[in-house]
Amino acid sequence: MSPTRPPSTIVRVLPVLTAMMWFFGSAENASAQAVIKVSDDVNFKFGMLVQSQADWTQDAGTGGYQQNLFVRRVRFLVGGQVAPKVTFFFETDDPNLGKSVAGSKVISTGFIVQDAYLEWKATDAFALDAGLIFIPLCRNCVQSAATLLPIDYGAYSFLHGGPTKSVVGRDTGFMAKGYLAGSRLEYRVGAFQGARDALSRNVFRSSGHLQYSFLDKETTYFTTGTYLGKKKVLTIGGGYDVQSDYKAFAGDAYLDRPLGSAGALTLQGDLIHYDGGRTFLDLPKQNDYLVEGGYFFTKAKVMPWVKIEGQCFSAPNSSRSQDRVQGGLSYFHQGHNVNIKAGYGRIDPKVGRSTNLFTVQLQVFYF
Image (cartoon, rainbow, N blue to C red; front, side):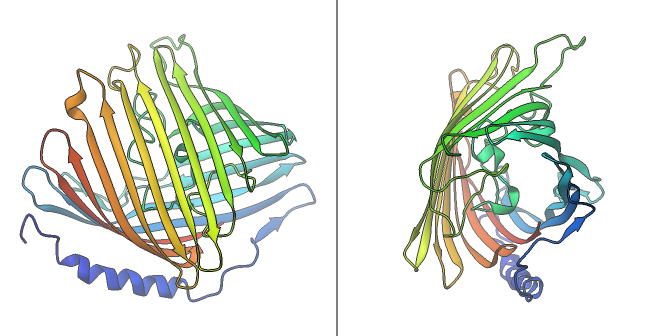
């Protein structure tokens, strides 16, 4: 295989994933969620998310392609109500199952707890969440993996995770959340465990986010990557994440606009400033951005999309800066329940060789 040409196995894998998509999507969309009702105040519902992925990543040193057929995400979900105004959500994950890393196949990583929280909702204006919770820094930072517009999250949306000892953007703690101004203004603010010193006497982590919806309201716990023309949304927001000398600030904007019966336009932008300061030396000062957009053709159920990202380090780390671009095509056979996405990406570091990435993903989701 030529080190600079895309691997021919892409042509062989894509038809297989397409056939699988038609198999899983042969049934009609469920019109209602299956709920186990214990009493008027207690109920449970279950779900799952499977994202099977074929991936070809070019090595900057040799120019050859690392090839992987693996499960990007496999999740079991359960949620419900345990008392009046008290709900819960629990989710497991076994990420990158079967993926080869440095020649070692990861086939038995074991499930991890991805989300686990209780919510007591006093009123629409105030609810208290407790447990393992998404850090509310930016829109992309609290987005559902099942409703992403492109294949995956922004490359820089969870850089705080490693230094703060978080789990894929989540941390344990308490968070207040509510909706004001006719449910157009949403606030989230919380105290989280963060990184602990040897005696666990250092200050807790604090994070929050404020957003305003100008058109249709958004009142879900997880934000959506694309509504596929089902809502008219214009939302802007901003957030922060701090602990000791570490600080991060973000701004975000989201537009989802149906354009007649032909289709709908979706755009999202996130800008994050990270500065680990003296607290997290492995998170140097940088300004990162994500811009993604796509147009959904309603009748064809097809969406061409593009994702543009940048990581801009401040001196003396400016040589580590890089740009990323990815474009692709998605077929939403049954919306976010069954779809297939294919994309080509390129990483352009300020210093070093540019590399290519080819990805195909099949998603099956129900909750």
